[in-house]
Image 1: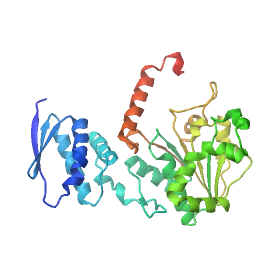
Image 2: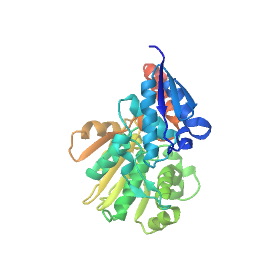
Image 3: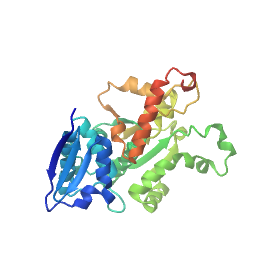
Image 4: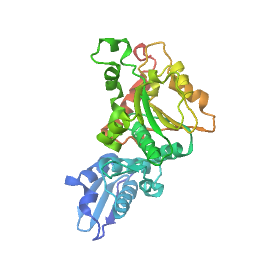
Length: 325
């Protein structure tokens, strides 16, 4: 394929610093991804390379995003390019119009990818939702934000956050403090998400009133939970028995979200993941939806997606090696 040249005219009203980024960092991301040259000249951007058509489409979409009042960052630019690779459009997806809730600082929380938007829609429409995907796709954070939103709208009376403390094993007895203090480190990601959405003081006040419970999965046995928003995090580390136990805790007026990453199972050798089994067994039930978030939905630093893809390729190439079984 021969090199092409495309010129994009920039309007006088366009905020060039927003488009270009600090020290042209935004343009550098596009140059690296599409392997083209971008030259600034007066009121024009000159694109040179093999895939100038894709670059032109991406830059025009970024201009549209800025004109719509949104801010650009590395994640958003990378996501726009990922969608473009798949023949999809960020602006046509209307992602930014969907507000989940507002943080304690008044910041609107929105889904940042089409996958996240579909995840939010599923949580609103279904009683049980599985959110499965790699690190950084917002599985837990969105679930917590949706739980807080449901509580504020008085759709539920309490929020219950739980996860298996697989890493603790039988070593809990050797740790200082009471049982809650021993398991708290394993529940820390849930606390972090809750503090970010509600604020630490409000979250702790609701926890003291037992409106919010943050507990290890073992505490769920024998309970039936009515009018509650229940989140099971790190579900890939549940056993088959634990998963069935958890799912059958659901009572009237309750919602459940189960999150997990099937590539990060930490169970002892010989133990089967309850999440893997549940997805196979429950996929056909109409009131249950399984949302599969992908690497394109990663909303952390763009290098996180590169790390995830590198590991996925490595494990695929070494799937027959004994050390990866």
